[in-house]
Length: 232
Image (cartoon, rainbow, N blue to C red):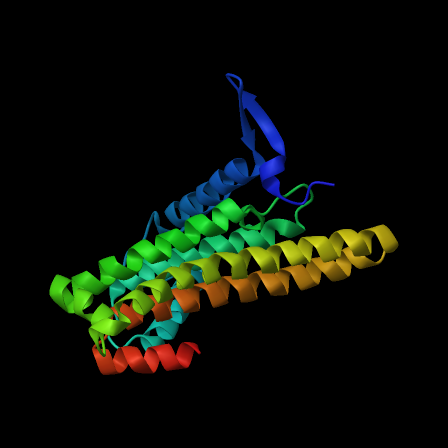
């Protein structure tokens, strides 16, 4: 049985096979893009919000509220980045209840890509907030002896993010496969409910950790220390 969507070829174009990871990743991006365009197509602050706009505003305000609680320097750009990560992972995981759906986050290549995006965002946000000199100086705090350890720490964050998300999604798939083999008529409903809950939690955890990492790079040294302690 194939547990990773990387091994499932859905289409072949010009002799090049498109696996489930690529196809369903584009499906999720298309759904998010089209839904956003549809909800905001007639967006006007002068017009009372409809129910869809109300739902969208509630989601955005909830994400912004979480970011403001974590970040010492709230940045609107952080909402765009971590909010996109949250929605992508959330939709990818929760659509697993649809028959035939293969969650892109069940692929290590997807989780590594998401983690790399966070690793790239950390120095970009840090330099944008503290300047190049201020950000680079954080690697030699409290002394230059800590330089290699701080570099290793930054790299380990990305690795932990990727493995955390991949491991949780894959463990759910393995458990579901075992239970379906034991009792195929009872456990599917239970596993769908558990999958929905797990998908929401994993999307939330990934987005929160990404926010903590970026906030520690943009904050002043004392605030960054507090963020690191909260993470542990």
